[in-house]
Length: 187
Image (spheres, rainbow, N blue to C red):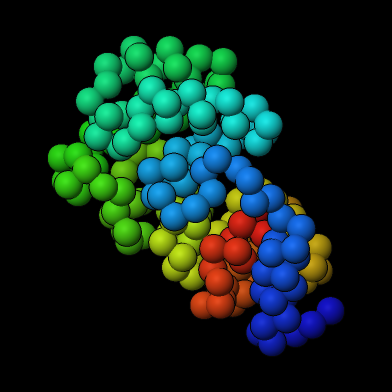
């Protein structure tokens, strides 16, 4: 195993992503609205299921203002079958706040993103790295498993001390060299 701070972990993740990672998902790219929508849809839901929902959602609500101006029942109907319906309600509320407070755009900083309903630290960081190519540490369930195995972190991943250690590792491994590919490869 390499040292925690020598950069080889992030270099390996980026190299793997560029060679083997998925490059054909409809939300990949630098459109913040698409990245945000996919990150919310992908919470507790498999990629294969999200693809069709994402495509229908974007066809119906092609922009963040279109989502904000939609009737909540229309949003909920389109979300039907995806589960965890609070995600759809929060998405709609957040879109309306973006129109009201951010000129119809998704914010490009962590604090404003995390002030939106349904966006926590990891989702905000994923948006920052995937949409804006900014180096921000993410720590979703997959990343916890990768970090714990690679760096041999013992303990329950969601317990206080272990979670703190995993966040420290995630922050130490973040790189300014292609943050988008690094985050995508980790997830």
